[in-house]
Length: 120
Image (cartoon, rainbow, N blue to C red):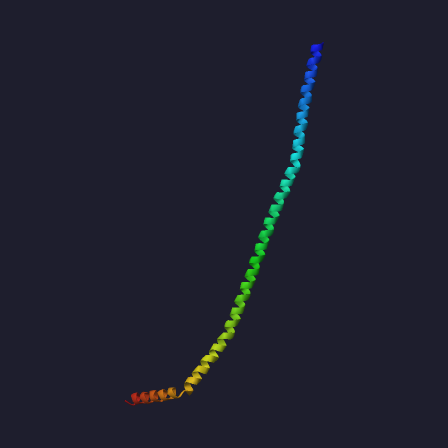
């Protein structure tokens, strides 16, 4: 009877030890779940930050494109304003040339030679 009791006590101890190991494993698993939830939250946060960075870059690209477009319009406007000014300068230069004494003398000489060639 004592041997039977001893065997039953040893079986009980083994079961108690197994139960303790199971409870320890459960505790470790339960502790691991919040860690995994935290890791998931961190991963989501990193993904959100990456998305925000990409959106920020996109906004900056769009701002740059808008500035480039504005600059192109300004340059086009400047070219349109500058072209008439250059034409006016050219006209003034031609008028000054026609009024120049040396030009008039050269023009008279040219006309005289042209008439002489026509007469020949």
